Length: 209
Image (cartoon, rainbow, N blue to C red; front, side, top):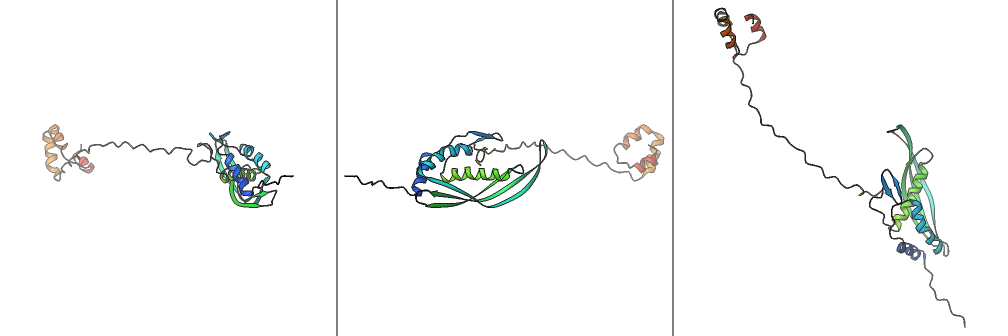
């Protein structure tokens, strides 16, 4: 007597859950601008075999593209690139049942003139898969906002200078006739006396000193 096949088939979301159960975290394997990160090829290396085994595909559609020229100065000189902003739709499709799961996603990519769109598409695929399955990556991923520890500002050193007493203002001489008479009698003593007074240039000319 033939046994009845009682094996229950999984729906699309159950299949996606199986992938999430298996791929928990990925280590860094690429480097850019001094930081290591998980490459798109490594993400696909772990996820695509399970997609094939479970009979599901990921359909990618570009719904909108915005290109903006970026001019800036680098160490090598002036440079121009294209910043591409792409709006995409990622659709999981169960090839056995036709069941679908649609997801909107957006990504930016900046590169040389003909590579801006490619950078955006590559970035979108990699991060859609990482975020959809909640796959953790290393803390110093190039796109991890916490990869750079917050620097604690050092308190500035304040130097306190003791205020100096203001220089007392010298008295002025209003009657130059007496000074002129004193200069005729004892010029040296009179000049010493004049050091105690505030004498203008005009008064010095009149006194001949």
